[in-house]
Length: 185
Image (cartoon, rainbow, N blue to C red; front, side):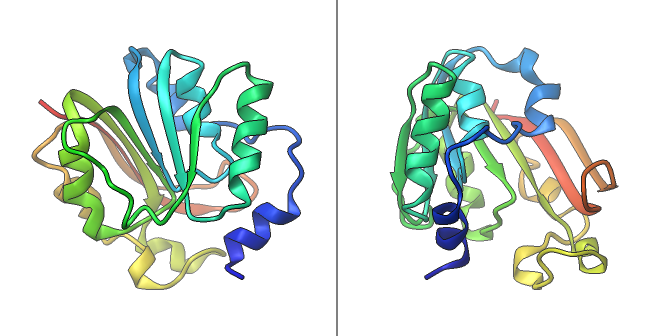
């Protein structure tokens, strides 16, 4: 059994984790429409968009995440579509989404698919670990860590609203992350 399946299977549908600070910081850009939450986990980021008028599809490969997503959505009086699927094979149709969320999941082969999946003026919110994470707890394999400016370079053909690489020591554990908010123009 995969580690995420075990993690979500062990959790009860208690209080939903907080949505990403990046989403909260740029909430003023959220105007509704359709959204895709990649590697959704417990769904907090997609549910945040659903409470702001989006029709949201949350995709996570762990089947045990799906009941948690539905329970959290119900707690917030919204409905989302939750799908247990490998996002690498999930069909992301061109020009389909007004927002795509990708938090703490890195599959470089999806970069062009994500860009194509955004509608004109669609927003991308992307945040994940950088190579500097190797000095802290968490993922250490280079396959799952961004090189300096890699995320920025990968999405330069979008309009960059915000980009920042940093060591974030505000939570329980320090983490090295890159954050991007971009818009397809």
